[in-house]
Image (cartoon, rainbow, N blue to C red; front, top):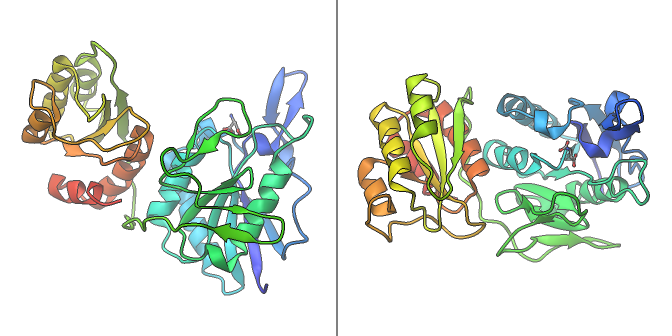
Length: 324
Ligand code: ASP
């Protein structure tokens, strides 16, 4: 193994300590609570990118992180980059990087569910596995990866499934790409390669509206009346069908020039024009709604944030969503 791995720390539980005065976990000064760093795998450059809990992560910070990752990967002696992150929004940052970063070198996100001072913290082992994956030839060309609990997941497929259990990251319907064993990193399949979206700037004024039985046009009207959105992602039901009054809101947004992307609140499957009743996807398509494929609402929002940085043309946005 020749070369080094760069570890960019962003914060999260992996870098938190219990503060009795604050009454809970808080970011550790310097973001270094995840020690010991696994320096026995290969030379490791540890750099603090930020020291925030991941609910404070923003698309703007993701963009800055993506540029930083590319800068590190451009160095000839760097084999791969590891990012230590909070678990809460990790899948969004991972998907952003997967769509944006254009390099065959591995980018591995990892995290912890337990603070560094708890019994049996999961952070050190997760870091070790992520560094080993970032240094593995087998991981080249696999896109952005999430390495947790010795499993390797594709950024597009992975999601946080449990609010507390350390075995929280899973790829429903697909499973992990591979795993980190005691002697080597093993891949069992390769992810579908995403189309890269690399706008010079991002449009982060994109809102996600999750629908429930009886949802109406209220949030859509607010966004239209306040001229507050450059794009809207909707989480509909099943194949993507929505209540009639919410559909009125979606039409209003489209009439006002706001692209509306449809996703499903189901954890698996695509949205598709199977139903033609009021609010069904057939009617939505005629009204100009863009189908979001099989990615989740939060991930579709990340994709729309990048897509809108590149184009405002609904046909071009639809083409980007028609691709994994
Ligand atoms: N709330 C924390 C965060 O996402 C949880 C974690 O790090 O796992 O930063």
